[in-house]
Length: 353
Image (cartoon, rainbow, N blue to C red; front, side, top):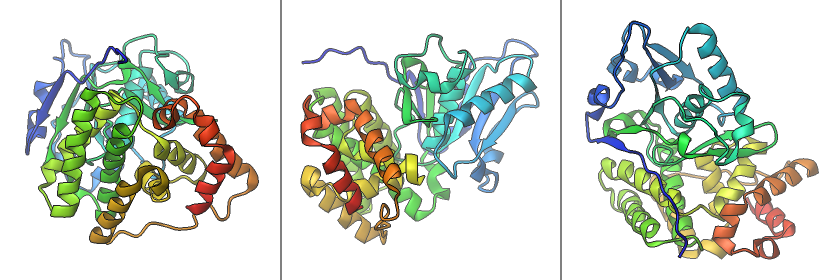
């Protein structure tokens, strides 16, 4: 059995209306110059959620676009803007939005206390200094970003996470009321990110009883919501538990392939996972069939032939991106994964998408 030192989010508020108690999680402002930084998906300028935030005159609100996957450049520019426009660092960074927004918030909190570009910290345990205190508030259920130690960013050469204990939120708010503004397809694709987290965790070589417990229950909750029309709060709990399953184990082939789709074709993480998972029946058999049944019930149709127009060099970049995901592929296939998932096999899988 592999022994690991595991960090989890220390504090959580859960339940309908929990957003109204956000201040109970925040560190106190100890002086006139203390302030909070809110990093919010710009879509919430029109959803009414901004009106529910208790912003004080000294606090700052930065809205970000999530039309594309978050990038190291986006994080570096936000960090530089915050430091340029304010005399001192914030007492806390509060991220409100989906996985992309939470990843930007986590990475910005890290970069406010660390020098250079966020690209140099893409990898495992490369961050030297603790981040600014940070709180995550998901308005989408499924990414697990609220539970993880990873801030996934697309850099100049790769899509990869800042994987560090310093990236993990210090507190989170899980309020099921906040997901009511999500379009149906986006809700489904994001929820399937959780579903796939659980499947890849349970079917992987790095599984342990802690991860299995989280993943099994989260998978059951996803099935209840999409096959039996269960309550919406189950999806938010599933997202958190699915994230914890990955913190304690690892993802697999689907995520490795989806990173290539995001890097070259710009697909958002949730839909990229669904596109990739849909061709992986050879590896995840009945769970791929079950996802297709969920899509049918939800009236969701995946794009097809997404890789048909790729240039040879673009396809090779996607293949190389997939093979860089050593931990997920080792989890899925073992130490000899390169002998099983060859470049030719990866090209074939992309061609089937």
